Structures are given as C-alpha cells and as structure tokens.
Image (cartoon, rainbow, N blue to C red; front, side, top):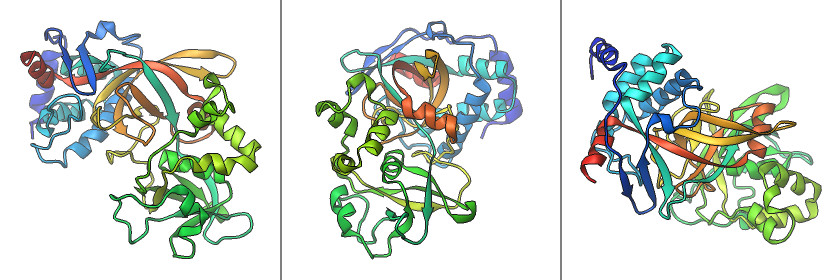
Length: 375
C-alpha cells in the first residue's frame, strides 16, 4: 500500500500537469474506443467531482478485496486489479477534499476514451432505475396475494429454470419460498427488472430485498412487444407509460408480462443500502448500470444525455458516474441505466428516462499508456 503522505505529495506535484498520451483508436470485438481530451467533454468543469470521487472510492473498496492478477477489463482491454491500485489509493486521499481538487484528480490520473459500438456508432439509449417501494405482508390475504419468491433449493442459479408463466401459474406455491406477498403485480414485475427494492410492512416496518438469482430464461422487453402490437408508439415507450397501460388494462396485463420469460428470485437484506452487481453501495445519480460483458465495473464514466423534466422538456444532463451495476435489459456498448435513488423524484425521473446519449470511460494513465504502446 502506498504511503498517503507520498501520494499527497505526488498529487501536489502533478496538480497542474496534464497527461501527454497520443490518440488511440483501438477496435475490440464488441466496441471501439477513441482517446479524447477533457476539453472534448461537454460541460466538463460544471459537475460535482467530489461526489464522483466518493462513488469511485466505494468501487475501490470492492476492488481492494480482489487478487492483483484478476482481470477486470471486460471488453475494453486487458486490465487487471493491479492497474487500479495506485489510482484507488489516491482517490481515498482525495475523498472529502474540495470539488476543485477532485476535478484535478480525474484530470491528472485518467484519460477519457469515447465509447462506440463495433460499427462506430457512439450514441445509445440511457434509462433510469430507482429503489422501488412496495406494500407487503408476510401472510397472504385477498389484497396481498402476489408472492416475492426466494431461490428454490433445487436450483443452482446457473442452469435454466422454469419460465415466468410456469412460476406465476403456481409451480412454486406452498413450498415455503414466499418471502412476502405484495398488493401490486405491476410494481412486482418492475421489481424483477430493477433487481432490488423495499417492502413496507404493517406499522411501517421496512424490509429491503435484493437479487438472489434469476431463472436464466431469455429477457424480453415488453415495451418492444407493445410497440409491435401497436399498443404504444415507439417515441412514447418508457417505464412510466408501460406501467400506466398495464394498470389501465388489467385483463391484458398478465399476458403481456408473461411474454418476458425471465424471472428473478430475491433474498432479504440486512443492509441499509442498495448495492449493485459489483457489490458496492450505489450512489443516487452517481452509479450507472452497464453491460458488464463490455464495460468493466468500477470505472468513472462521463455521461452526456438529456433529462426529461415536466414543463421544461429535455434539459442537458452531463455528469460523472461510476459503472457499478448491470441488468438484463442493459445490452450493448453504448447503453446505460442511471440509479436515481429512492423517493418520488427518483421514481419520476427513472420512470420517464428514455433518452439518447453518449459516454466516455476514464482509464487510468498506466492503462492508457499501454493502449498507446499497443497501437
């Protein structure tokens, strides 16, 4: 572990030194990356970089538990845990310092790379998710009748299990797997998509639940099905519009939802925080879900998109997040899902977030230099 006084001294020395790495344009099986300068990032300089440092440190805490030789680069490049040791140590020193110092940290220790798919397209879809809240009970009754299931004991979590339709038709009934019963099947469906949430019991007791396993059946976007069937127009599809239609059309809702054969099993959490697939605590509007087969966990991501705001239209949304989560619907080189946190604002933003955008991954200088040498 590096001495913190040495790191701080090195930081001061580098404070006004910029990386001088030549441009890189390297093609990988699933994506292209292209080095750019910080001056190429839209509105760089107008963000809360201190919050981004704090989110990055949370990822570093998980990375610190891994062996130096473990590969964590996903589809980007051959990146190992050892490549992040120094930059993570520096982040811990900077965490809690001023926003100006946090900004200089990213500028001096990272190089931004534009992400595009293997056809060179650098724009994609960005959606949002939040910590969903459902009303529930431990015992089933006429109102609370939709079960939240734990993982079956005979399921290893790796093979393919029965489909959503088979499970919802009673396959697991009376096997003691019901963690809770909730009163809203539409919210339960979206809980499966989000992978975690909270159940409010009687007397306002809150129980958090998280992802335990999935049945490994194919995930199907019911939004795409609703477009194909002429139920919704492509430009109108969002989590909010889908929820509204499902609630207004209960006779057809079950059949539509069963088109998605993917099903999630949950476990009760003894934690006050929501954690992503990396295992790190998620930070509202600083944590991003990505396609983990392409984009590695634990890296700063500069996002350029828009945010739909009532009565204001689409406003610019440019900020630094950290790749800390994934999801069944998050597929592709340029694809992201922003964690908005908990509460009414988070729900509204997540429900209607369906915007085009682009992003840049920040690679540590040592990794960027290795990329340059491999050109």
